[in-house]
Length: 322
Image (tube, rainbow, N blue to C red):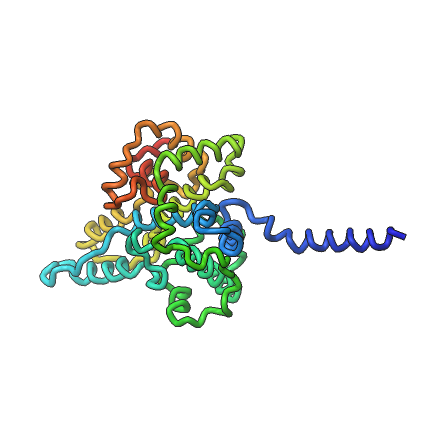
């Protein structure tokens, strides 16, 4: 009597597993994994602190710290009497216009955590759909560090965002508990999680929970923040490609400008860097870290800026040799 209902139930469960499989298939560190984590965090978080403590919140912290570190340079108009005026003017305009204005983030004090994460997630959703329509391959399976650059860069997708003609309305919904996230009353509690001791304790716990497994660690909050920071550092990587050839007499000067933009090389960071190795270095060198140096470099009142784990280690070349 129960055989048929059980059979049907088994079939339904199997079908559910098959339908859900794509969401499980994305590896930590991929675009698909990040997108699913952000979507879930926005839809399910019970409040701003839970949102911040999510994988998506950690990645966003790291990303914006890395992006600000990588995007510090704004080039002035060259002098009219400069022999390299034309070359410099062309490259300065290209470099200064490197970021999509839709996603411009000038300073940490401008960050509204809820709005930032919602914009971040909805833009990823539009970006994925944009690439799907243009048959750019399976974006979701690709590594986030080297793939996400085109999300915030000027170009075809950015122009679509600026025209507000990108696809249908995103399906991501905001949890009712997050409708006021980012208000003044939320910020003191959120900022408490930025301080160095909290990040150290969290990374130690994540490292232990991952059992020293690099793949498992990538899925932790500490792993997400480090991955986000490295991804942010690579946000200017696209500038190293597709450059116009300068005149022979100006080549050295133009090359020097582009070398200064190659932040990752100077900080000993590569796209193949393992978040686990960075976390180990952070834990090992924790006692020697000076929060005042980080605070001063960002001009902030809080003890540690978002993404401080990656920033401090890389800016002090502590990742060299890893």
